[in-house]
Image (cartoon, rainbow, N blue to C red; front, side, top):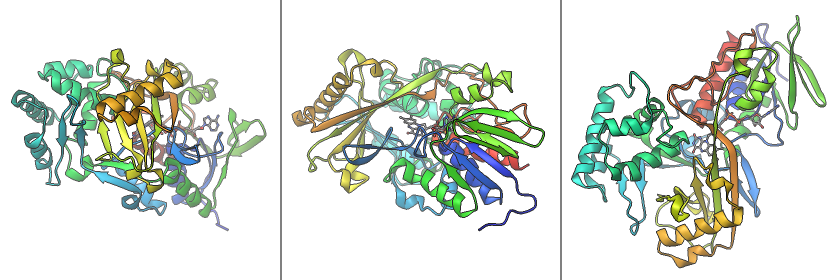
Length: 441
Ligand SMILES: Cc1cc2nc3c(=O)[nH]c(=O)nc-3n(C[C@H](O)[C@H](O)[C@H](O)COP(=O)(O)OP(=O)(O)OC[C@H]3O[C@@H](n4cnc5c(N)ncnc54)[C@H](O)[C@@H]3O)c2cc1C
């Protein structure tokens, strides 16, 4: 049993995605009594475990960066060892030998030598590509990784004379992977912030981290155990439908649920937050977001099937029915998943319109061609998972919502709140911590 400190508050966090879990952990760690309320039967939200063909998989393959400092800090707070839970790889863009792609792989040297050596040893780039890349990165560094006036990523690349090869093989896939928005529509400033923390940062910040556990086990489950051990509780299967302000506090209501709290953190996705706040804050309810889908195609092959590396970039070309942008060999992350590949299609609004069997066939054929392995065209089974509103469309000058609302004791958390980062696990976690701090102050 835990005793509430005199200054401790009774806080509800609505939504057990990564933002809600982060907010709840932050509040619990400072002695507040937390109730975490989740509509689903599992925590993690848009980064959660799903079960397919008896495997614990994810609703979408995720990559974290060494620069995800708040995520890594909170994983440690809840007793996890991030270095044991994720495979750490140097930042890289590696296509198959037979494709017209490139190989650009950072070395283990300290920054900026890790990128400089990647540039020198890269394959598939001409000297003019390399020069353009070097000029881009020194100009971006000189500008402090920000433009005075935001523009699209395409305009940024044109302004800095980036070659067709760099755009196709490096910048476009990076932009789509990081912002889930095509360069024509993506914010240059948000893209530059990601580059600042990857190409422009110390080497370890630029590392790519691939989860070896499923995403619910990677943080949300340990966060819940931590909250419970600090006197809090979690209510699964409880969808909150209404928020009321009382003189004594804030009342929240779901189908079979009603309870009153001193303060609440709304950590639901933006479209739900807007509904819940409709009566309370017009500026939130009327805010306009557009969304982009992400599709993941899992393909199971014989257990002996293994790529030469944990992941590869793929050249996507919708006109050729080639949709995949990256392929991950899950056998590198979990031996039980040997022979299982995950192919990621970001900014997938078009691909997600295809019939599942048609799309998985197209992806399998794309792999067979990219790796020159006819057997990849015939997987044992496939599964397609599309998150239709995976992230907001990250356009130039997008006005994101602040954590603070007009109502005292109601704050917002989520990847869509104000941040120089795109919709990512790190922006969700940072936002959760920030929301909790507002409540506690
Ligand atoms: C397929 C895919 C791939 C991605 N890849 C990456 C990646 O590689 N790297 C990266 O950093 N990020 C990636 N992202 C983005 C990242 O997953 C999200 O930014 C992050 O998970 C958002 O977390 P959140 O807590 O803000 O929101 P959510 O995860 O949406 O959490 C909101 C929670 O609220 C719950 N909820 C909703 N309504 C109610 C209600 N009325 N009452 C109670 N609970 C409710 C939901 O069930 C959910 O659990 C990816 C996202 C997707 C979908």
